[in-house]
Image (cartoon, rainbow, N blue to C red; front, side, top):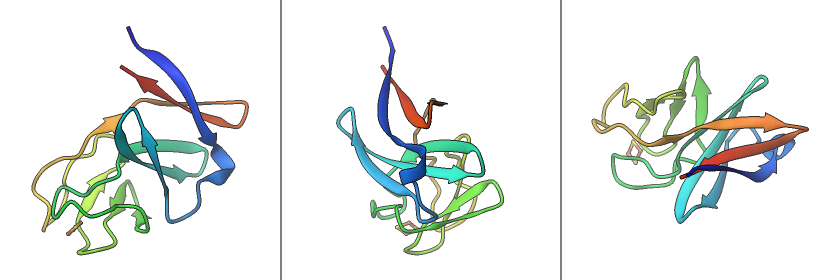
Length: 102
Ligand code: FES
């Protein structure tokens, strides 16, 4: 059974994203306006950290070689990444980010 876990304050997520450890995995939190997204913190290209990149439209750009991943579904949108990355369900309550733990 899944449960929602409070992880960080929404305000703590800067423009370069915020990397956290969650449920044994590295997770990247990204804020776009009022929305927060949770993606794998590890790029599927060379397993480097995705934190430190930037948003472009509906995608996150890896800071290392520029691969782009869909914010909503983790889909690999451009080379050099060819594998999608994981995403987590997110909700925000009272200024906090909650992730769904499985
Ligand atoms: S490690 Fe992300 S594009 Fe190479």
